[in-house]
Amino acid sequence: MTSPGTLLVTNIGELTTNDDEHRDGARIADAAVVIEGDRFVWVGEASAAPSVDQRLDAGGRAALPGWVDAHTHLVYAGDRSAEFEARMAGQAYAAGGINVTVAATRAADEAELERLLVQRVSEAQASGTTALETKTGYGLTVADEERAARLAARYADEVTFLGAHVVPPEAEAEGAAGRAAYLDLVTGPMLDAVAPHVSAVDVFCEKGAFSEQESARVLRAAAERGLATHVHGNQLGYGPGVRLAVEHGSLSVDHVGFLDDGDVDALAGTWHDPARERGTVATVLPACDLSTRMPLAPARRLLDAGVPIAIASNANPGTSNTSSMAFCVATAVLQMRLTVAEAVRAATLGGAIALDRHRAHPAVGDRPERPRLGVVAVGARADLHLLDAPSASHLAYRPGMPLTHAVWRAGRRVV
Ligand code: NIG
Image (cartoon, rainbow, N blue to C red; front, side):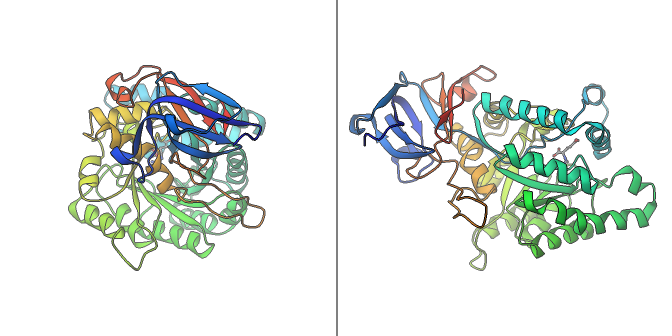
């Protein structure tokens, strides 16, 4: 194995692979990996590593797959720190704040919107995020949603259409007819305009956003075009979001702060149903729960019931203005009662499963082959996060500390 451009990262004190072929919770002590091009081509114990032309000594540091952040809203302009301050002074979060960002985003020119997006993606990368999903949803006109989807497709691994974020004010002002017309737009011309840039459709199924029937219509329109779906559900109270996601075979239902036993059982059931190709992931958003002062999602209960979970940042200007996955992981361990191994897995492989990127997808049309994410395994995309710590447990043991030492994304060192 001596081809040019091959890199051996060796003397990794503890390597989390998420590859169940490895013993000890998918971790290897005294490990090494070989990266060639954009892939891992060898993973194992350092003593058995092949010799290659370039070598990097990790100095006994811990390494893990780069974070896979499966829920963000990064295409926007404007600031809502005043709303945040009011919330910290006791005001409740209401979905209506979204329209403040819609107005600022519509007013921004494309170059400015792209600059802001690039800045946010590179901030996320600086703390170890190597793959991310981002959503539209702050444009809410055909042109503004198309612009957001097109920009997002340049920088995100997966783009989700969220035209059904809220009914925009100009449609709301027209009463029931305006609302119906907006749904026609979202499920028709707007969806057609964004379709070349997105792989999935999302809907905010909540009081103040979209009802069960309206949300079901959005999910059906996505399925008719062969697009995957996600649901923002059970964020602000108990409701139909989880049930809808389960019924429509969504990849994930996100937020899930308010779950009854039926919701948990229904999610677990999706992973044991032979009629389904796969189940629905519960994506928990710890930074959002804290920033909205809502109850933390019951991640422990979900895992104990056999529901795969993802941990994501939900980076957005209203409810979670951070892309720090390390902060989310520390919160999941310290407050949601996950073990470090469970939280790290949920923030890497869990995110990949929520995006259906835990498996490779062959090239289709103009879309190139998409490699496996969220694992350190031969053939997976070479996304590696080296910590300034001897073990991943430091992520929760030393919360808030700058533990990212180096990051490779698709085989290229980016930090
Ligand atoms: O995931 N819940 C809906 N959407 C975002 C909030 C967006 C905002 O307030 O701007 C979320 O929390």
